[in-house]
Image (cartoon, rainbow, N blue to C red; front, top):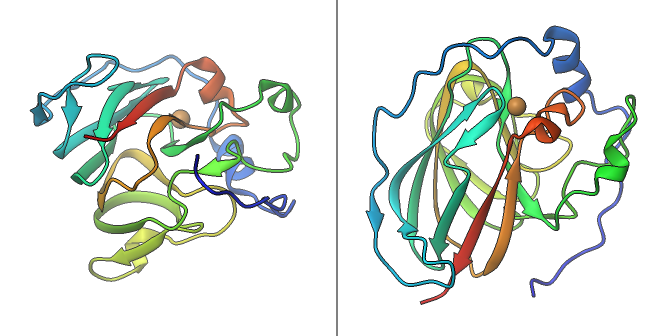
Length: 210
Ligand SMILES: [Cu+2]
C-alpha cells in the first residue's frame, strides 16, 4: 500500500484538454512507423513471467495505443524512458496512476472535476527530464523534477497529474529510479476528454521487488 493523500479536485479552470480538444478531431490513424530501437531487457522472475525492463527503454504513443502496453519494472532499477509521440496528427500524453480510472466520470463532455488518477505514480518521485522535442506542455504535479537545459522547451504547466504532453513527432526523456511503489499501475492518455483512453490508449506497469 502506498500512503495516500486525499486529493482536492483540480481547479475547474484547467484547460489543457479543452485546448487539445479544440485543435484536433479523432481522425484516421496514420501509418505506423515504429520500433527503431529495442528495449534493453533483463530477464527476471515475476509473477506474470514478463521480463523486467530497465535502463534505456522506449515508450511509443500512437493513435490510439501505446507500445509497449505492458511493462514490468523493478523497485530500485535505474530507468531512462524515452517517450515518443509517433502520431502525425494527434497530441498524446503519458500519465501513470491508480486505481483504474472510473469510467463513470468520463462520460460527460465539459469540465472534469479531476484528472484520471486518484494516486499519481510520480508523487514524490525524483525524475530528471531531458531532450525535450515538441513538448506541448509538461505538468510536474508532485514529482521532484530536474530539468536538463533551458526550461523553455519543457512548456511547464500546472493542473492534473504528472504528464508530458507531446505534439506529433515529439519526444522527451525521463530518467528516474523506480520508487518503492510495488504492484500494478496503469498508464494512459486522457487527451480529448478521455477519448484516447477509452479508445485504447492505456497500459499496465507491474512493479516488482527482487
Ligand atoms: Cu493520446
